[in-house]
Image 1 (cartoon, rainbow, N blue to C red):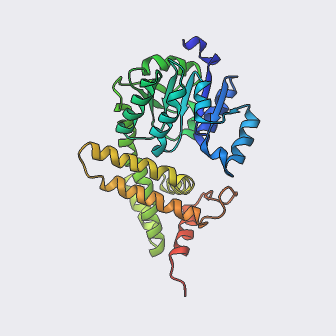
Image 2 (image 1 turned 30 degrees about the vertical axis):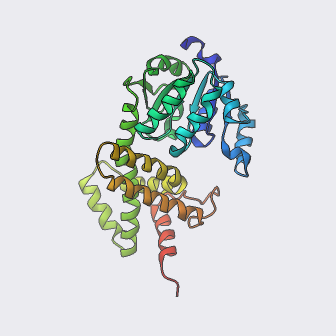
Image 3 (image 1 turned 90 degrees about the horizontal axis):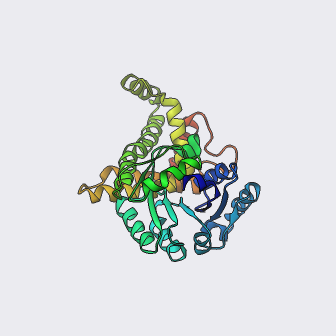
Length: 308
């Protein structure tokens, strides 16, 4: 099966940052790729249509049309839509079609999505993406999970997904690994933005960074802070949705998700600020692109100061 995978028709549900990266890397190998995104139906679809035309990606008219014509469906949408997408594609899946769910959803949501896909004759595989996609592209380290993971892994390797490794055949284990990691990583993003912006207000940022460097000498806090500010400003909405799924994962373990829930609120707050234009016009060269996090912190503080 893996030897024939490059002749597969791959369908992407979600044509955002991750979907476009996957499309580019697959099309570079000559793999047939189609995509569908609900944003194609409004003004936000213009850039997607341009990208598809440039890379030879066929745009489907609906979830059903995409599923009906695909040997492998890859779902890469916002976390809250993982189950919704599974329900939308399931009726049109052909028997045996693989569905790779890369969404950052809770174990409970993944199990729900799997139940829907498998009942329709598809083969659901959860994928827990364990780090940021852009640096690795389709080689990003990803844990595959569920009873069909071992069958899909060789085919994905043949398609260039070198970081995909089959993990537990029990659904939810891979996503739990992702969710627990996100408590730390997305939480650190939120804490850095909150701590560094507050430090900037009081003029103590140099002292704070010096102390952090002494405690954690392996981290370049200036560079890391700039990266965190950029990523949250650009993708805070998606991160907030993921953290709400993380919070649900914590609840499913019996704990109250104080840290995860607070992180979701901070990520959403930054996303609201970005939508309100605090950081410039989205898509322009100056938007969340400063190598110095202080630029973005000062923009936040400028909007928080009371008006005379």
